[in-house]
Length: 164
Image 1: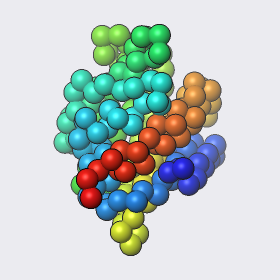
Image 2 (image 1 turned 90 degrees about the horizontal axis):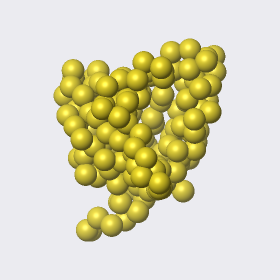
Image 3 (image 1 turned 120 degrees about the vertical axis):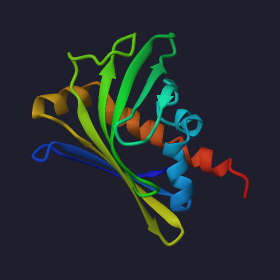
């Protein structure tokens, strides 16, 4: 399994997922930078993602939806706050309605992705920052932890499929 650790810290209002990848940091960055690769792993296996907009420049947005096995679409968005390829990405992370408009009834968090070169492998940490304890509980009860672990579990197959 790719995921090596999940740490929830209710005091700091964070959840950090650590992943060790058998890939260079530059290759690992492409998993985020290329929307077609991102689509192959962002959603859990039964909820594949489709990125409609994808621009990782600060101030820009990415919009996507995940499609359930029944065909229902669940929309989300990122507002890019900071990017330092191939080491760091920081976004505001929120839910959207069917038209892609932010859903104000659900919490907006902040996600920080860091990539660290460890002797030819890459350690990726994805830290979700929640605005409140209630928001953390709500998003976790919606399955964020399980969904992220399942989604990240697809990365090994993507990397294994790369030509040597």
